[in-house]
Length: 161
Image 1 (cartoon, helix red, strand yellow):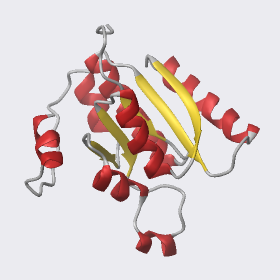
Image 2 (cartoon, one colour):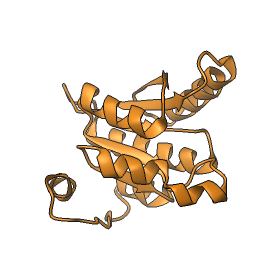
Image 3 (spheres, helix red, strand yellow):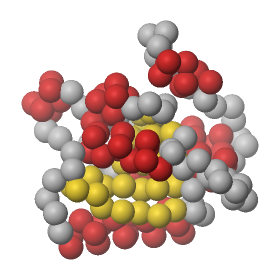
């Protein structure tokens, strides 16, 4: 049941196993709220047909699971693209995976999830496991969410969500 003018749930993907879990959680949340899902892959390499193929496969998988979604490849750095699209498209929530395809040595520089959550003006949900969100969406359990706060307007928005 899609609500009219429902704010979008925005989900970033890099096609990793963690990103698939985040996409599953985003699809469950969007479906539960009757909101559209926007699946986005940010790429610094423009025009790769392989990336587009991966995105189409992932979008079809989520659509077959019942999600109302659109997908797109956007040029740019992942965290910057997600934050910008959330503002431009009036997203209600950004969903990303806890870990993506980066090598462990590069984790020390900060993650897409951390940078997105730190700069986004809408709540950012960092997913490790989709199962609790899927069970909640099916009405099988309560949803328990841990919210980090620093008493800022962004933290207040996450708590209100």
